[in-house]
Length: 441
Image (tube, rainbow, N blue to C red; front, side, top):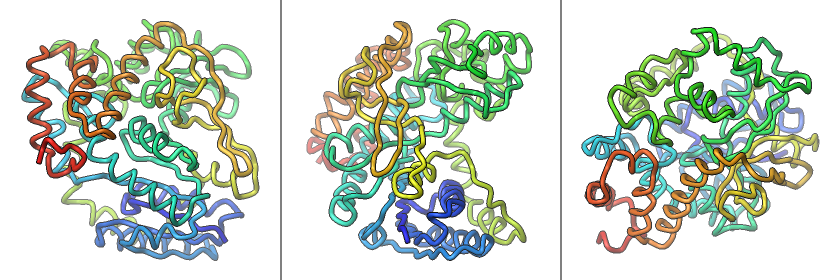
């Protein structure tokens, strides 16, 4: 019997889908699912949901729920993290304060001023989780789904290099499927090489039955319904020559080209037909709405007569199966430090590259250099992330300022004096959540 600890298990969508995936593997049908969350109400809801999944599949698995992280981690073989450090009433200021200064943010969970302050609050919590893993299950495979992915993984992997840690994002396989649909290809016939940094990785190769499929993608974009589905990503592809992994809304935040003027926001970030074209405060507005409705949403799901037990396309269960299940090797894209993986990105920064999971091992694949234009774009963001992580680990506010000052969108909008004022205001707003910054006390 294998044990899986879900830290932040109250994340209903992720936990439900990941448990469903795990139990479809014969090696894990009798697994023990240990759910941990600091919110007892959400914990009880997801506990009942997991019980329903187990019963629906007639699995011999068991489930427990606890607010004690140590209890959940003791003896775990696999650990999954889906925490959010602070609820919406805390992180809404990551978006509202920059908005006062003219920085228009769509999601704000990855980089830029919003992503960096989310990292500053979350890194101490993640390091505490790693300390507990080191103590209670040092051989476990730790898969992180919490954002900002790159900065969190970078901090954890520096402080705990001996733990098996990687970060997962579904944008790689999700975008690969989207492109396959656009050209009418079965996803099973698509192969690709994807690398870069989280939420800004690129398909260096995208092939259908071994042949370059990029010409087919360019042809597909002549159709208005496809061209307009992803305005930012498609525009980047047509100019940069390679397709990026994350949605138009996300990507519009990481570059200087789309959110610096109202007319550009109107053109590129408002009318896309896919799920997140880039509207202002998209994720904040979503969370504010679901804050009042999540209980009913979960209850409605639990009360369904039938639920799907079909395995999804998240990587986690496949990785666990490869490492300590039936040992079927599995290739995926993960977030690890750049130790001779991408030649023209900063040594030691966090990169998203192909990895291979096999018996007791997670191994990253050497990619080589990125095309120059992609390396230039990734370098700016990766170096800002390096400064932000150093600032978080050292409690150095000046490094945090530098990280935000060189952020592409921020620097396109604001002067250094304005950036300093904004950063000071964000520090003041977050002082109760940043114990590592002594100057705030």
